[in-house]
Every structure is written in C-alpha cells, then in structure tokens.
Length: 631
Image 1 (tube, rainbow, N blue to C red):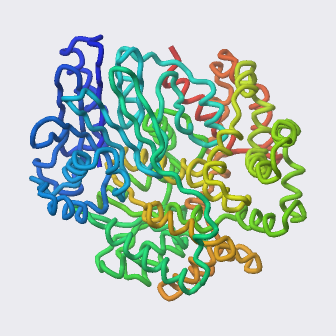
Image 2: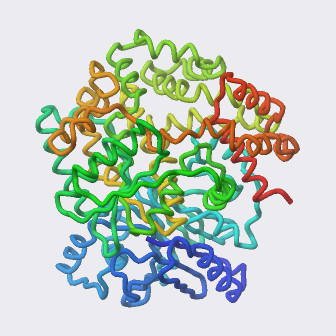
Image 3: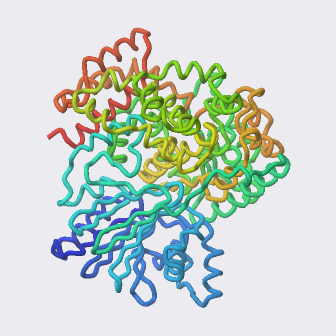
C-alpha cells in the first residue's frame, strides 16, 4: 500500500530541477499513505514518486519507485496483488526471477512478460503506473472495482498523476477552479464519481480502466467487461452454497497474506461476520473492531460482540464521540479534498484512527449487499421484475414520488426505446427522486443551469447498459457495485483508512467473488416471504453452519446506523450547520439559495420533514469552499 505520484513532461515544458522539487513535494503530501519509505526517480522525461506503507516484504529492498533488472521499466504501485505468490511461481517457470519477496516486483515482471494483458491475471486492488524509458510511454491501470484511486491532470503534453487530489493541487501549473457539474453529480452520488473531480482539469481514472500516455496523447479503455448471462447461472441451491463457501474461504485466505498485523472491521452484520468466520478457520489470533454509540439495545455492539465471542477474537469497541466535531469535520474536508454528502466518513475516520493503534491491515465486509441483494430496495425491485410491471405496491408508490421532470426524461426522452431500456431509467429515476426534488428547491442560478445540461440518471444507467441485465434487480446490483455504492465500498475505506496509514481489504470485492455473485440467479438472492431477512438468502444459507442463528436471521442494519447523527444535528451541531448553510459563498457564487436552505433546516428543527443527509451534503460543500476558495 502506497501513495504514488508522477509527472511526465513529454515536451520539455518545465525545468528538470523544478520537476524534481515538485515530485519531492508530492511525495511529502502523501506521507500519511506511506510513512515507512519515501522514494523518487527521474530521467529527462519522467519524474516518479512513492510513499510506502510496508505490508508485504517490509524491507528496504522492496521500496519504490522500483526499476527492472535492465533499468528500462520503472513502476510505482499502490495496492496489493493477493495472488502474487502464484504469479511469482509462474514467472519463475519462465526463468523470470524476483530479487525481493514483494508483490511490486512480481507485478513489474508480469508486466514486462505480458504487457497490458497482465491485468487479466491479477487478483487484488491496485493503481499503478509503469514507465517504459526506451519507448517513452506510461502505462496506467486501476483495479476492477476501483478500490485504489488514481487522479490525473493532462495538458500540452504534461501529464501529472497522484493517489490523491490534494497532491495534484501542490503543482504550480494546476489552477484551483470549481467543477460545477462535479458538485452536481456529487450530491446525487454522495462523492464525485469518476471520471470527474470537484476541480476543473483534474480527473479520476474509472474502475477497471487502463490508460496509455505518449507524446501523441493518451488513450483510455476498459479492460473488464462482465455481462449478464442467464445461461451461466448456477441452478442448484446446494451447489451454489458450496461454491460460496469455497470461494469465500479461498479469497479470505489469500487476502490475509500480510507481513504486517491484520484484523477485521466487524459491524456485527452478516457480511463482516462472514469474513470473521472464514478467517477464523485458518487464524486463531484475530483482532476485531466495532464503532458505534453505546446505548441500551445497541444492535451493532451487541451483534459484533456475539460474533467475536463465537469466533474467539480479541474484540475492541470504540464509542463514537461527537464532542470534538470541528476537528473531525476539518480532517474529513482535508483528507477527501472534495465535498462528501454522507456521515459515513465520520465514523470510518474515527475507527481507522483507533484501528491503527492495534493493526495496519483490516478486512471489511464491503460489497456483500451489492453482490447478494441485501438492501430493502432490492426486494422491491425483485418483486417488480417478478410481477412484470407496476403491480407491486411499493414500486407504484415510488413511481408516484418521482418528480415530473424525471418522469419526462424517462417517458419522453427515452419513450421510443424498448420497455427493457425504459425500466433501466425507471430505477434511476426512483433512486434519485428525493435528491432531485431537493436540488430543484435549493439550487442557485449557476447550479440550475448545470442541472439542465448534466444528467446523473444517464451516468447511472450507463452501468446497467454495460451489464445488459433485462430486469431492474440484476441491473441495480451492478449499478450499485460499480457506481451507486462506490462511495461506501471504496472511497471511504481508502481515504479515511489511508489518512491514518490503515489498509482496508474487502474479500467480497475480489474478482472471483464478484464473478461468482453474478452467476447466482435473483431467485436465490431474494426470498420476499422472509421480509427483511429475505435478502442475501443464499449467503445466509451458506453461512448458517458458521455463525450464530441470531446473526444469520437478523435484519439488515447499516454500518454506523445506530450513531444518532440526526439527534446531534439539532443539538450540539446546530450552530455549526446554521453557519455553513448560511455561508455567503454559497449565494455569492450563485450556487445555492441560502434562504431556502435555512428554511428547510429550521423546519426540520421544528419537527417537520428534513432531508438531513442532503443538507449535510451542502454543509460539506460550504466547508470545502471555505477551505479552497475563501480567498
């Protein structure tokens, strides 16, 4: 795990001495991601840097940037290749031997051997860049799920990249300009989705993408193209349960490869409990961690404690406190470099700081809901597909709540398409109805103009179309996995974790688990007759022998759901929120109607309807503007 950065100056626009200094500054800004070793490389064109958090082969021999034996290839790599041992054996059979025990050198040699086709052999989370000195080309790739970030800026033959946005902002040729479409998308998707960022000119490489940069320009392509295939489904439930047990066990085993201390983030939910149970089969020395707010009947602490006792772990509980909130809010804004419309980073940040006192690596249950259908809306979408139309009561009510402008987009703009294609937009419209109504009321002139030209629905539906599922249920799972839940699955763990030099790993996001999940039919994922416990039915069945009955049968409870943010909203945090929602910058920049924002806020304080998640998103935009644009 590392922070990586670099500058490729194809046209000699800047002085070499200046670029060496820039890369050194970039590395220093990434120190929190990798406090163990810092390193830089440069030649006449390329300037690369790395700050390393040592996980596998913790010796100085494995530091980066790392050069090939002939000195022609230089790699900077952030992440972990879980199957590096097997890949190293394959390379050795070909006579390609490694000088270190690191996965970095395995990845470098694999790239030298297979070129960009090496991506198909990788199991892991990664963002890496390989400079070919002889050919003057830079190859870049990001893992399939987007667990590791890669941001870049490209102009006039000068390509700059890093693991974090704020690192690029260190560079003198990158101006800080607000990207208004990105703010619009960020309110809909919680965090700004790839390929956008909150700053003009800075882009995020999308998940499962590769990029080649030369003096002639850059080319970006996707390298992973999963498609819905009903003919590939596992038909027998017993076979399916055995496949889940085997795949999860094998995945957890290789993901636990680490030379650094390792634990598990345990919420007490089915997914994180599954990881602990699978890990306990091969490891009897496990640290587990839970964050919540202590109160009578607290589901998270109680459930996590039950699983920890059942699996024999050393369990640690962190009570989330809100008294030092201003410091925490500022840490979030600084770490993310973008507004985040969620409370999720607050307890993820706090837990990461606590985890670092005990271990360096922690596994999570992220991705289980998106693969197996764990949310309430999944059951509703399943019912809709089963009924073949709008007969399902809940879907009918959701359709009635869709704002008229969204209905027009679905039925007018896409009305000449097939019924299947219209259904794809229908789910997007239902999902975004609340935020669309909210933005309609509070947007200022400039954001209103942006909302007319930039369509979050279309961005969301692209993933459904890429997957090709005929129904709403299967399409929604893939949409959430690749975009709708990216904030919780990959953004929060990476940014909040690395802010404290903690590496999170998610077995459910391993490519083998994801592709297995895509082979399981909807009828094995959802059992409507079991109500809330009917989600992830086949996963529950597979885990029944390994976990307490109470965990297998419990309803879905979100990570951090018992933390009383709404209560603090109108008590300890009231003045803070009032100040941020009335920030003159919001009105002066013609972004938001502060009077309408305050009216909504005060109405909520009086007991009225409050979209407090959405208001929180605007408050975070306000803080972000103060941090980066107050001058």
